[in-house]
Image (tube, rainbow, N blue to C red):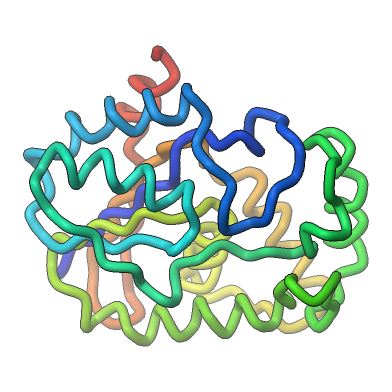
Length: 213
């Protein structure tokens, strides 16, 4: 039985309500950097395996704090990047509050093939990416740590639990699940198992420490 550790990135400027930037280049906020530094001290002695990271800057910066503390290097995993539902060009200059109605309308429509701009993903594409990651999970080294994103992990959990993602109803049901899933910045989940059978454990103790910063 293998163990994997998933870490959501620290607070980004977008999480803090900042204006829209290209998805891959959204940086951590000052608070996000503090979160990443603190979490590195908590995880450093508990994880011995390889470090995998999304190519998005906010995840890479969160992983960088852990790598600096442990003297390790991170490897970019091609399937770890976040779901980009809306092309940044369509929402340029909007704050988080201004983006919310567009996001909610997208999930209400539930069209898994809808592409909201040239630089956006379809839901079908991100489902395929998650399924490909699940197929590759047995090849990851035991005790690997993955620095990534909230919607991405929510969909990973959804698919590991055996739920479908084929219809508008499936897509809307997933969104309800994902919004309710505990996923603060720097959330940590431990996954233990093999093949397509994994147990998920939320590190509420670490979440409490992050919230206290």
